[in-house]
Image (cartoon, rainbow, N blue to C red; front, side, top):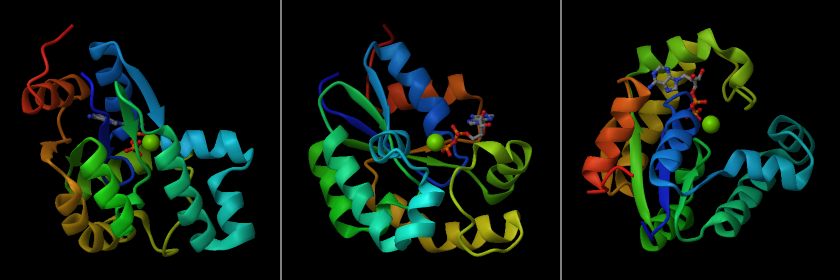
Length: 173
Ligand code: ADP
Ligand code: MG
């Protein structure tokens, strides 16, 4: 694998979980833009948003995306990375973009089961299933626009990895 693989999708679709497993299977490096950004800024995303606002956070997210993009990497992106047309084009041009697609009910169940893993501040202040539904309605078309491949992320992580490998015609190591 030479081109970077960008995983896009809503919070809870499994970008981090599946990305780590895919990187392991392919013997390449795993990078999470959210994690990279927080390590580099020495601040949580919630703190960045609270202090400097969403616009500043989005600008830093684009910087993070550009900084981590390199060959032989699996890159898990933040759920809102596709809001920027620049980011969508950047990922499509520099690598292979995979949309981990899962229904609202699956996403809401995962986020409710593991709330501590949701590092992002709530986007709307509404109950989780309502928020997931609204956010996905706005973003689904953008995930699809950015993606070269759409994979069913409601399956077990190992199956999602296999489907990505099949879509990308990557032989298992
Ligand atoms: P993201 O990085 O896209 O926000 P995560 O990988 O952090 O999503 O997953 C969110 C939660 O859902 C985690 O608790 C994770 O263990 C769980 N999870 C992720 N993918 C799957 C899957 N395919 N099947 C079941 N649970 C999953
Ligand atoms: Mg993640």
